[in-house]
Length: 249
Ligand code: 3Y8
Ligand code: NAP
Image (tube, rainbow, N blue to C red; front, top):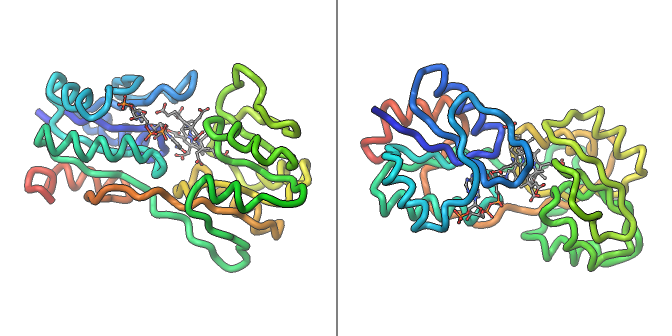
């Protein structure tokens, strides 16, 4: 009897959970516990860290997990590295369900930077009005560039106001839509969108809105991730479970 652990927190993880529930597969979806009310799931959910690689190995063994699917966000680099290491130690099949990176198309005005630090360096200049679409975890780091106005969007109301002297906070969870994001950008007279190359559809609306409004995007590229089998849609994961996982492909 298969017992699948999905490391979640993305649209694709939720889509996979729905497919597995429909097939009657035994699966658990795991959240880190970053937000107050994560999306309800059609499979059992666990919330919170495992305690590093060792803690994850213990969890895999104690729960009799037979397959590990890492469907975390492309910037969840620590979780993804731990998943590869723990699956190897526990000798269970592992696959990543991840979204291809976004690529600029006609009309896009993108500038790529390798990481958050480079993004901060890139905005070291005259005052701008920036849509900082990075969520809550990184907002305060931009206090090193206090001259800008920041449009922030968090999943939850923060316990303390963000440490940015000029900001407007929107509390909303995606997926978002292009018209809504365009209205938000116009209402706050945004000059620049700063975001991570998350990929997927849930956060893509702001890129289409920026393109239509002719606004530039500062795109933070993904961190390096360990070598692993990567699939790009939940149906491919079902095929892997049924045909490939136990043959090490
Ligand atoms: C806790 C679990 C689903 C998944 C929905 C997707 C789409 C909507 C768009 C913007 C960008 C951002 C952020 C974003 C989106 C989906 C997806 C996605 C980006 C939830 C969720 C959890 C999180 C954590 C949260 C982070 C933050 C990032 C906000 C659930 C809603 C900016 C990613 O307040 C905080 O501390 C939030 C932190 C990590 C990134 C950050 O660094 O701050 N996601 N988001 C997960 C856990 O506990 O394990 O409730 O569904 C999931 C979703 N957020 O099933 O419908 O699939 O990507 N999430 C980014 O880099 O773009 C918002 O505003 O335009
Ligand atoms: P991270 O920096 O790679 O992970 C840090 C630690 O958080 C991990 O070592 C692990 O703790 C714990 N953790 C992370 N993901 C977990 C999960 N799914 N289940 C249990 N523990 C988890 O990760 P992050 O960038 O903080 O992201 C945390 C979560 O938010 C992930 O689930 C990710 O998918 C989600 N997220 C979603 C989006 C989005 O746009 N959909 C964007 C960013 C993050 P231990 O070492 O103790 O095991």
